[in-house]
Length: 420
Ligand code: NAD
Image (cartoon, rainbow, N blue to C red; front, side, top):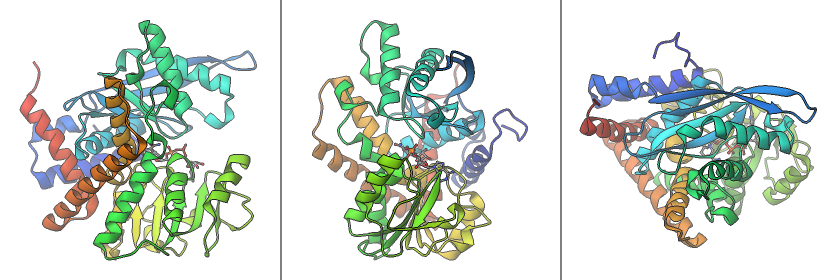
């Protein structure tokens, strides 16, 4: 893939830089390396929607399968204004490494629709979701590609996709998506899974660094499905959640926010801004506030060359996908900041999605305590593998995690060979 390709995007350039570096370290076969740089298939669709005012508007949507070498593809669906083919492709690639790293029988995929979800009515969102599903229907299915929620989408979105797909099949097919509401085959613990996985990963990192999480000051960027759950669980563990931010603004209280009250405020007002017991801070400064642990859990490219040297945290746990650029990574490495990388830190979501898929295929559902303890086991095992590999190879955690994920996918390619 070249700079001039239609796939070009900052996130894809980062993902390819990471892949190329790791391929060199692993001394990957040149042909396999080249195949890993390209998505297996990418679909671009136009989505005409009847808006509430009676006019028709056309949105652009994408679904990308990065590879299918280890199984059907899996990955979220994002509704956001800056979604592009390149970004979706990069996210699909990251899903490949993440699923392989976690030992899941999936290839990576991602989908997206370029839109402002908060400006659409519920009816418009439903129309958009159903028509998008109809447009990509050839690419999805329980043993083909299984979407899940990501930024701007939620359980309701998954229920609409499941219903639309099921209607075309003439039967109910719960396994076509994960992250569904419980009543239609969702899994206990899925909603909290990514945030909970972050806490398990952070717990392991702190243990290895000889630190106690209690009393540590935490900043979280993004207060959605991932950020809000991570903040709540860490607050309950005795951390001081001092700063949080969302797309509308950021707030700060060095003595700690009451996260339960903050969640109630967000439920009412739609944003963390205006929370009574805190000061507003400029959004860009949130990441630079004095804290021990920083959790970027919003969008990509937030920690860059121009701000990484001013980050005060000594542990960064990537809730978001691709929040750190390679330049910022190098700065963190030099400064001794421990970065728990996205493909490990936020993998709790896809792990419990896998549990949901397995439960759905078997029509046999597990208790939440069972799911939580299995998630903890998978996260801890993966963390220990990555930590061990990083120590052995003398690399940072991201390189070690990517090496493990990429090595497995490459091995799958090698052993399956090239068709025809
Ligand atoms: P979400 O839509 O529930 O929440 C996103 C949050 O980020 C909101 O609070 C929003 O206001 C905020 N935000 C958006 N743009 C921002 C900006 N420019 N600056 C500051 N804040 C901004 O999304 P989510 O599901 O919590 O996903 C967040 C991140 O985590 C994404 O990068 C996503 O890819 C990643 N992720 C999500 C899951 C999952 O299970 N939902 C799993 C793995 C990774």
